[in-house]
Length: 602
Ligand SMILES: Nc1ncnc2c1ncn2[C@@H]1O[C@H](COP(=O)(O)OP(=O)(O)OP(=O)(O)O)[C@@H](O)[C@H]1O
Ligand SMILES: [Mg+2]
Image: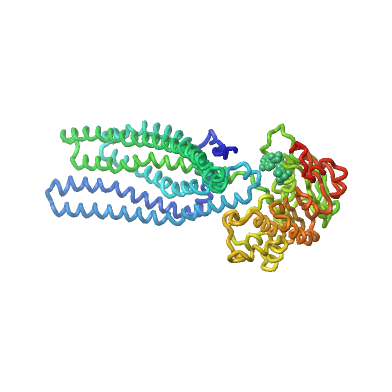
């Protein structure tokens, strides 16, 4: 059995000219509505942080004043000032947190809602290309990183920058020569930080893509758990998972190494500078060039700056991660949507009614260039009210052809007319309200049976429509035997139902809205002959009222149709009644006979 694919390609490599700032600026539209709160919060944080710089000044006053004068009252007063400053700082930081928490949760929710909406509108071709785990991780981990960036690094890069600047001004004002000693580490630190930023950005991108791959594997093996267990593949799946997880672990370790490196440099270098300043300052105090209080103030200012400087390393790291997360988010948001408006503008009505394919060709966007198109110049007319069966070997393009009618894929050439109206000129919503489908794989959602079926109708449809549709699909019997009837919840993807039950619910969903055009892709394949006969009898009534295209593999399904079209090598090879085609088309006769001529693909 083939390996379950485990390592989907990352959909897009990081752009070479990536700029974290440019990526993060794209968040502005989402941040704009909460900008006032964010700015207020940043301002509060700047004030709080600068308060910590006042503490050394109080210390200087304490040392040079009350301590030198041996005045206990003054010392107590100084201690009280220090306590008040500390409390105010803490309260202000708490206030800042309160200011940002709620609006930022709102930003995250809005971005997530937009992403979800986007995913609904992106064309099928996009979803064919993208692994679901990549989309899932963008909607979860990446958005969380963005919110954390807005809450923390965004503010604190500013706050710490301002604090460091103000601190240096204070240092230089207290003693410019000692201040210059502390300025020397700035140049190497800036260089190290910029090197770090670039490297960390690349590793962060790799890690986030790998999280997406890992999510895909988990999702796939959970959805395919029956196959994994049935074929005893749990060991190989676990191995595949372990491989991916250990790759991710390697990447995370690379991140940790980079972070450790920058952390070491950022802590050690200023520490050395402070040590040098301490030696120089002590010499100056001993020589009487400097007051002890000034040295204390100077050193405690330098100490107060240690946290703002040290934190820059991981603030930059978090910003890089947020920038890659933002890039990944907008990769999805920038993908071309299905245009809501018609592809062309003028509305024309010409030709007879029904469904008309005129020279329709189609190739999948990701098919190899030299491969022949799946559909190559299809001309076909389904008369109004008629039911046409579409027959063809497996892989001949039947499903592809049906997907073109509701424009799940866009025809590469030619046009399709519904009652004389070119579908490329129709609003998508209107087109899809006219056309209803039952797909080859009956997909159900985790909702009640009734909700699943009524999905196929407008909001006004209710119980009577539901009963009728269940009746047509011969599903009323088993649905009524379910614990809560139509209110019974079906599990994820409807896996709590049998294949035939799912197929009948999907059929009910297709017919519940009494669509003008009905497309059924092999709708009865999973039913036993007796149920199939009963469904067919009921379906005949429905087909009488609509224009229908029914993909059929078996003579019994073909019997539902007025005429049959044979699809072969991307073209309509023959059209006629079942009897006519049996007589005139050897391929048709072969497909319908079930005889084995030794070749599967003709
Ligand atoms: N999303 C896709 N991307 C690329 N190629 C595709 C895609 N879907 C189908 N194909 C290819 O297009 C061809 C026609 O597929 P299609 O599903 O239309 O066949 P079909 O006639 O419905 O077959 P079956 O009777 O087995 O359902 C196949 O060769 C298939 O490999
Ligand atoms: Mg098919």
